[in-house]
Amino acid sequence: MRWARRTVPAVAAAVAALAARDLIQRDHALLRNFPVLGRARYLLEAIGPELRQYIVAGNDEERPFTRDQRRWVYASAKQENNYFGFGTDNDIEHTPGYPIIKHRTFGRAVPPSTPTAGHDVRLPCAKVLGAARRRPRAFRPESVVNISGMSFGSLSGNAIAALNRGAALAGCLQNTGEGGLSPYHRNGGDLVFQLGTAYFGCRDEQGRFSLDRLKDLVAGSPVRALEIKLSQGAKPSLGGLLPGAKVSAEIAATRGIPAGQDCVSPSRHAEFSDCDSLLDWVELLAAETGLPVGIKSAVGDLGFWQELATLMRDTGRGIDFVTIDGGEGGTGAAPLIFSDSVSLPFQQGFSRVYKVFAEHDLHEQVVFVGSGKLGLPDNAVVAFALGCDLVNVGREAMLSIGCIQAQKCHTDTCPTGVATQNAWLTRGLDPTSKSVRAANYLRTLRRDLTKVAEACGVEHPGLIGTDAVEILDGRTGSTPLHEVYGYRPEWGLPSPADQAEIVRLMTAQAPRGGSAPPSATAVG
Image (tube, rainbow, N blue to C red; front, side):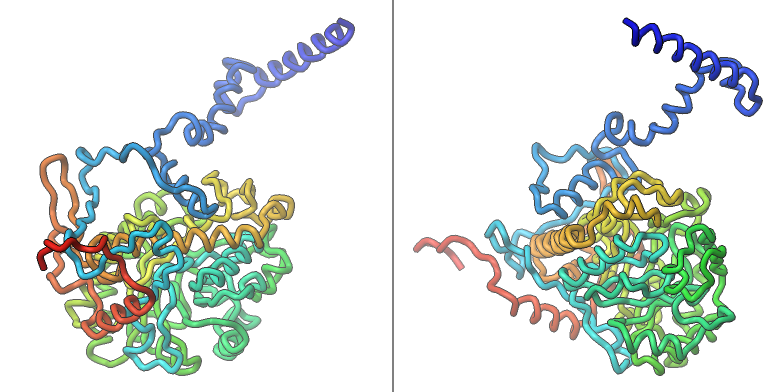
């Protein structure tokens, strides 16, 4: 009772003081009109995403990733049961644009029947990266699933280290992102080094691109290819700003910038200003490093792609790969209008670019990489059918190492230590254990892609044609994928020689599936 007599007046005094403050302040009309009680509105607004995520939203309602999608990634990463019971809860019959994958009753690839089939499958790219242009260090990527460009600075050092170790365990590539090559990228995984507009990691004291520094970087690290970043799906044609408060000594050393000062990435490259000079720079980088060189871009105006393909056809210069990022792709921070409405979504953007290269008879000479929510098997299968040779996964890989879709990436307060530089928060992310989960997820995605390919009657997801996918337009109709995007029947597949070689590589791995012994009366 004595405790109550002391506490109640204290609480009442605190509430009265808060009410007085609300009545006096002029910033919030709601609080002036409804002191104290009005604060409930701001509390609910603050925790609204969490309420919707865990209580209100259905399994297939949330964005960017639904509860079902996140559950599949989490379970795959932890090697838990990632199956779903009772049937789909997606509204297939009434959802225009829903993709349906058409299995084959009798295909040349027969899926194995064992429970662990495909868990350790080797799933290399159907094309050799750099072979068409005879790059000295051309190679066949060992995995069709790789980790997308996410910079140190945007992600924590522990997150980068976990992803790099996971890439090493899964035998795949990790893209550095435009923030340079940090010590956290040196944990055994092979790399694609991304060159952004600020040339972090290969710039001189004046911020200019330095070819010598790039060559030194490549010589001293496991970089397998170079990617010139032109734009990103979630923030196309924008530069970037890393506030000085986040530019630690470690980030400064990685990027080659002063510590504690705002870090500005320009919106355009200084080394080229049109397609012609871009191709000159591509050939310079390839000649000086021996590496395959490609570009990453979101898709808007098609005039750029038409000019690029025409110059490649007519001059003999060219890129070795092109990474197409969809407008639904992720980013650490971007203006809402750019995230929501600038640049085409992946399928529309990719198909238009692929058609340009195919019409110039270049599609078999270029390795096509897709990104933008392609870390989910259904999206990835459609991407392969459209002509992708590789897919990059970003946010799905983040989910595998602990991201909970809190959407705090731009605030430096990521609660799981993935997208923050806060030392207290990043300490909670253990790179050793999380690397295993990243590798588990990557392997599971490859397993599911292999299983779907075999259900479609082929040995490899890169051999899934546009005839294997139909797009629903409602309850009563559907359209084949090649008709939706105006493809010719032969488009979307590697060259006949590449097809034959990837079939050989896949069938040499292990015996394929089969059935029970036939009876004496079996026919054929």
